[in-house]
Amino acid sequence: MQVLAVPTLDHLDRMTDSTGLIQHAIYGIPRRESGYTTDDNARALRLCARLSRHHADQRMLTRVAIYLSFLEFARRANSGFHNYLGYDRRWLDSGGCGDCQGQAVRALAEVLGSGLPDDHRDLARELIDSVRPALADLRSLRAQAYVILAWGHLWAMGIKDIEPLESIAWFAAQRLVESFERSRRPDWPWFESRMTYANAVLPHALFAAAKRWPAEAFGSVASQTFDFLDRMTTCESAGEPVFSPIGSDGWYSHGETKAIYDQQPVEAATMAEAAIAVFHLSGDERQLSIFNRARDWFHGGNTLKQSLGDPRSGACFDGLHPSRVNRNQGAESTLAYLWVEFQAAELRGERGDDAVGVTVSA
Image (cartoon, rainbow, N blue to C red):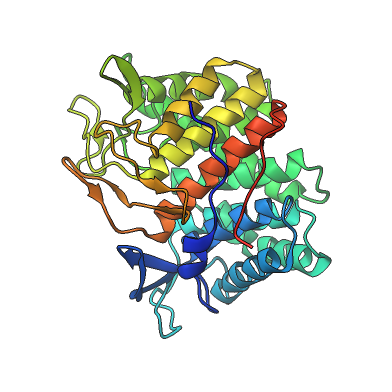
């Protein structure tokens, strides 16, 4: 597989203004009428906070400050975060969706566990503490998974005074196991009666929980479901296995036919990230093959043999339709691509490749 440097953040910068990251694009041009979302700005914050470990220059700190400021602005008076902000800076929702709460806390955990300036980390902790009551009431399985992953990162980084969040994470992991027990069938070891979006975050979260609580059923359920997801999202193309995620045009319900299209970049990103987590947990080299298949999806290793990621600009097309790519390059897609490329660079560095370097635009 070709080794690529992490692409520039040129397109991310193009999509970002003084308010935050604009949600959608028309081709490669920001679509201002789409406004902003908290979950996209959270993803951008998480990426840039992680990149700041390697590039703690003023431009990177400015990016972090913009996205962190957006999350502070999104904080609701009672609890939780708003999600949809119009281009006129007016909130379009009364209360954000569950997933955006989890995405926001995961990004804030990245800041809190980083070497960013004290005021950045202090604000991240304040925001996590202020929305904690809302986290305990989350019902979305994916939102709960994001909270587990947020806590898992803080625990792995040795951050102190996170016991209240740990309690929420433990109950969230128990609920994931309970969902698995209700939904599983002999031919369907899964958390729900159908597979939809960002599927890999569910087993990924339980792998994180299993590190802390190995005596619980978390690790067993994580292994069963991740193996099943890998089987359901791998197909043969020209005699080679390729990543073929669950399509958003119909999803995949138990007993029905899997939707092949439209394939979304977030599926490849979450699958790649879960595989790396399992590799670090188990040392199983097979997980690197899963990671490589998911990453190759961006570079033409997919059912259409079409590249979606552009290393020259750091942009990514919004998905695969039955006969073509979606040529718009929105925030979620671009961040999915950038995160996977950064993980690939980190992995090469961990494995002793002297040629590895994380390169971002100056």
